[in-house]
Length: 522
Image (tube, helix red, strand yellow):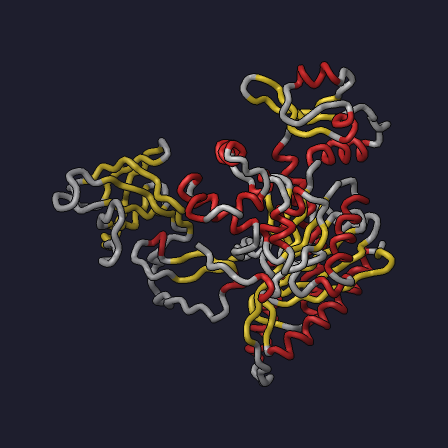
């Protein structure tokens, strides 16, 4: 169990956001975007439960008509014949909740989902940028209301009391020394218990959180289990449970807010260059360079566009970052759309590494390495880091594992490959299959070279064969088929050259070895 802490002794502040009509707001927003005339009839969201359609959410008009969430649709129709219903869509609700979480990122990067219709924000050290905790909460709720989303916000020293106050009160800011008293007056529904535990408390005459907290912990644990005690401690703020942000927390970030939204993409890029310079100054003061960066463009209508990229070596060159972001933006299928304008732009360093100044030499090789690294970064920004690859030698005997593809940005050192002896034919084929393909082989003796083989329904008569080249599995590895391979370079009567191998030693490892073709020579 998390140790109890004194709420007044901690500086952490949590904002819980309740979206009680998220499903209703989703439908209303969709209708508003369609451009049609608004439907003013009462609205309810329904889902099938136990063979019946039941209401899961109602708007204000439906509630005023007597409709209540949880009732059957037939009963709701009897009290409100003009009721309009829409099917529940948890996936669309989750998408809208994620969009709201992205928008809330303008207040703090520590935003966590509280499904199905809530968010938790860690605003520690952020409130003074917005005029205090109350002003921040009011601005957040007002911003969501402008987007057609109803919300309530509550601020407390822990997620538990903030969540309870946001959902079962009018919200607001709870002082650290008064959170427990505010939560104590809430109904026991604020504890979020299952139905059996809730009914047990009601039958015991406990209707508020304070009434439950007035009983001894041993009595509650003996009758309702230790889980109820843990939930009660969480709701009263006696324990401090961490939140899990939905996005990586940046190491460093700089941002720019605008009194009037920017309506030009070129103006946004100019601001991005200024932000890159400001970020470079902070990185230089810390002796660091960025390895992964993200630019976030917050639109006035609530939409957020994020552009992330990485570099192969730590850097704090603002011009290089701007060039890479331009490459990334040019490669987007949907160009950066300011819409109603950007009211906030942010540049974040998601990953940093130590970077110390290095003297520039006169070796042309250093310049070539730098140009190659920049080319790799530009290609990776345009096409994606997993599409720009380099081969690395692998510590393995089997040919398919002798080389591995890795993102080129992850390969910093020069790759040393064994040199091929001059004057000798290549030992490996020009084209090697990712997976060896089975063939039917006729050999003079079981452990000899093939005389004829059938591959892809075509028969090939062998006129020359070289081998075998014996390759065994590494002694420190274990897999399902640690068989020894005998490779042969063969040439058929048409002049085509193949790389075949016999999988397993005849008589010692297998009774009937199988044959495969692994590649083709030029």
